[in-house]
Image 1 (tube, helix red, strand yellow):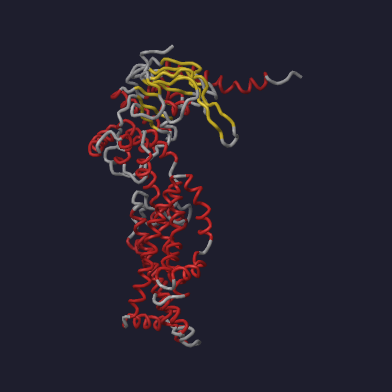
Image 2 (image 1 turned 30 degrees about the horizontal axis):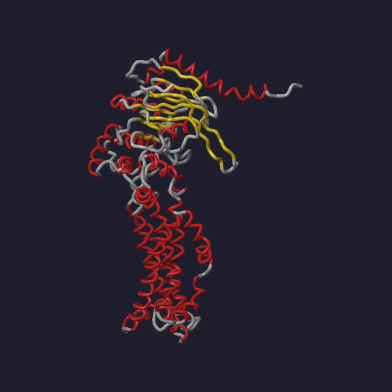
Length: 284
Length: 273
């Protein structure tokens, strides 16, 4: 409940009579309220797009500098009319899938080990800190030397990009296990394995999923930047070429493709996070 | 001095802590001698910080003792075991598990029961502690008093020889606390398990226990003990019984001496002018 709502629920001292105050239930929100986020969100996007289109229509700047949303939409549709786009999407998707998939598996394992075994953490902390505080994309030139300009160098960048947020969040999840829960488990004579499986791991899930979600952002940055620098195919490469050949609408269409992917993946993970939090009472 | 008929017996128990912050050894409990008879409800009261909870943790086997001996049915206590079950001050429930899931956690940790049997018995236990209808609720949906019922049911389900209770009602509001005391006695009278109850609430100790032991201030020792000769079953009106009030006065005086000592010592220890 926002402060504003609280004001209205609290008893009124003067002016308004009880009968005139509307009845409201804290338990069951009204139907209109339920759709408020979507309605307001959509409305604000529509307004922004309209404003953009109006400015573009005024043509104070050529299409090269400021294409309107309609130009971008047309470019987007054109992308999918020829089959070439699928090679780019396939390339970027494969790079992303392999790199991010590896980061999830390895990051989870390392993060859990670092959280559970203090000495393992002491040993790896310097490296994790070094890589986490360095933008991993500065390593792209090195990876190009090592792996060439094809997929392996992109996978390496994506992997390293997503790996460290996942490690750090997973480790934090394990470390944040409530001392009271550990004490209860020990008191009932639980083995370390049982404590790990039944107390530590479930308690870390929200942290781990947050790590996964943050990892997506880093992975997408990796894919695009790596392809901008040097690649044969890929959505980042498409954006780079469109930019260099002054096809601004096409370039923006590529940007939207990337942004859409990021939003989609983040939303999916957010949904999964919510599913795992069914036990948390809804605050709203 | 070893009492063969004792369930739990503590002889000269010393418990020390290493304090990392001040880099010093801290003596929480120094020379506790006491016995708990089979089927007895024993309460320990004492000024706050007197080491009573520390002592209970040692009985549970969560912390080691530095000196003396601590035996349950004649066996030395070295680690937690299925013969004891603790009801904690903080409920310590797994927030992602339902009431049933939390109640079975104790036996699950001990690995003594199949899952289906545990769930079956948990449902009976939940009914016993008055939570019927809340089997599938999550801890965060429950009130403090209800969470403590789950805490109690979890301990009871392990069917221990001895029930250890660490100020389980301290965090509850006054009315809920009284109701929980009443219900605890009801449940206890059905099982008659040996119980060791720690509290700082004198009334609570007298109301529940067969015998009350008063601890000195830190480092804690047994200062005195008092048989509570109030007939059972006891309802809450017992708390206004003249005999009850006599007990209360006696214990309160005993504790007050402990609270007053430091100031007297301070004056006595001052150099003469």
